Length: 185
Ligand SMILES: [Zn+2]
Image (tube, rainbow, N blue to C red; front, side, top):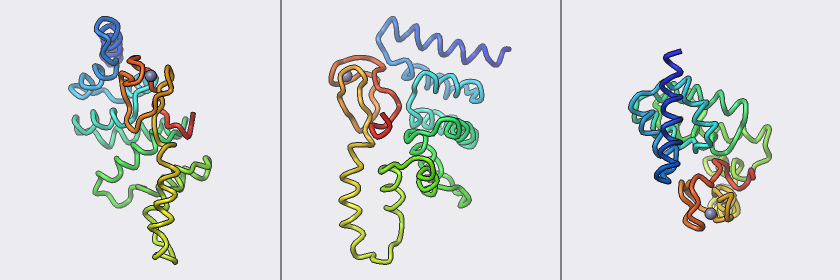
């Protein structure tokens, strides 16, 4: 019971501070989580709050619990695959010395159930092709097509951005960006 009280209190505090000051809830919650981090209880709660996975990774790295974070994010990805979780998992694999981690193979695995241009382009960029001399030009064209699909979009005004914002630069709304990329909206 005590283990659940701490994350519940942190989440509540995040909402209280959000209500009073207008700060983004996750902006408040994540540093508190990094300070003391009962991951198993907190991550499901925080993901319900629509926090971008990259922010959770920062907190996990700060608390030195990368492996635990990976296991939990993988669990969430299995239940509800998203590009945001996928990008976070690939980034997490890249920081690991363990060659057993799937890394960019995750993009190819993602394609097995989602016909995603973003995932296909990301996977291809690390591939060695038979016609290698043509790869840079083709990759450039694909990257250009996929880039707008990787953005986040404000649900209130439609403003699009490469990074996730707590306050929309377009309409000043707080917490108006879902942690999903445009390709999945
Ligand atoms: Zn907006």
